[in-house]
Length: 214
Image (tube, rainbow, N blue to C red; front, top):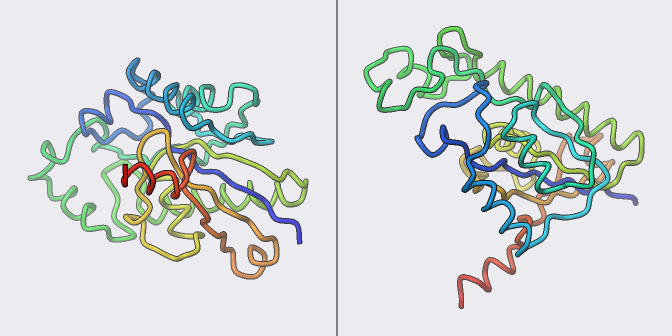
């Protein structure tokens, strides 16, 4: 049976990431150091060749995708934009530690939302609707190898909702420039909306183990 390969990659770092700020829709570019880091990762491990690249509309994802996949046109998916942090945007957890709205939201209730932001439920619904549309479209059109370059929260949501083995969001944390390789089997996708996580990428689990043992 024909299967499809999906890669999920987190974008490089911005000054907001480095400062531990909540950065959602603020359109920060990559730092110069992060650009060099992505180029180093690419030179050392090589990003895979793919047929289609889907990206968040924000600069940090677009710039990262251009480095990872310079030969591919980028297909912008507005639904893959980062979380809307509302009034928490550009603040840190330390800034917000005495904010009651922040405390309620930080507990993780699915219906909690930052003031003027989106709730956790709205975020998950948005990501899932966009992701299912992309995957169904690729299967229908026969596009066999695809990549998504987006934000940690977006990718961790995808993995926690659709990934096998099943695991909570925190399990799927990834460093900037890295991510996961997944196998899409159409029958499993159609029956259960599940995708198998088969490896890390661009560095494989075997390479990671070898590096740790050296």
